[in-house]
Image 1 (cartoon, helix red, strand yellow):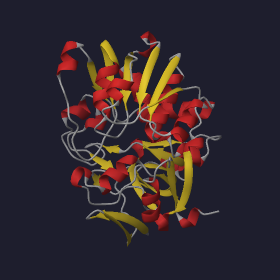
Image 2 (cartoon, one colour):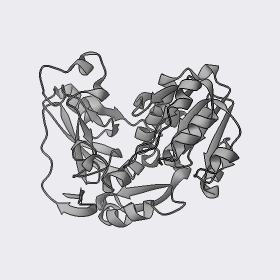
Image 3 (cartoon, one colour):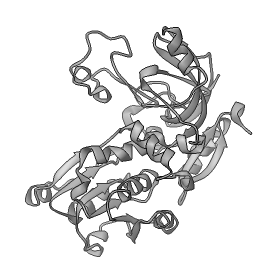
Length: 339
């Protein structure tokens, strides 16, 4: 099969054999892959990554191994998306770590992560995941919607971590793909959501979803430019510069949710955290079931965020295009799935 691997800062085509299946795992034929900012950071050296990237996908189960016939019948041919953290239980490692025993499988001490840590990702014609990680895509949810389930679930995680019922206004810093999804999820619950971004075209997408937008420059001048304050601030700029503005505009006793991951370090002044008594929440993966429900109900439709779809064989070109100014979500489609 064809896959693409990051090595020494380059994305290279790697033809190879089909992946082998463990007991309780599924072989998934990939139908669509979303290019994520994390993939770009992996290319730049994040996690010192070497391997097949890609963790946003929708596909069809082609084979399962080591399960009862009823389970096999349930999954074969099923359209699925999948959670990316693979726990020690699924990897057959015993005894289970303390985090898995506490039900925190996404923080498993010995986990691998699809397309990020120790497990080949979705920039390929096929991938493997434990059946426990898979979620069926319901009828009425298109491939173009389902490929957003993983990042939309990450946006929904904020609702699990913060009691937004007490919040009347929230700020989202950033106008990129994840920031757009976060703003939409918050807007479904909070009366006013303000997105601070640099790109007029991207902010136009947010305005059409009922989100207020404010333009910033993305540098130190924003500390003088922005005068509003918010009880809830989500930092999703994907840049080291976002944290300082987030600390400035958050109210005393407010909650700051950090979503950005990038290769490098962000300068941090700790005194605003202490003086304002800020609660800082790190936020990563989230509930797939909630994300699927939002897509199925039509409450959130992420497809306007899609800029372009490339064949999988053009993955290096697609990854370069995804980094161009003004580009939103770029998808990869294996040739066998081309219309």
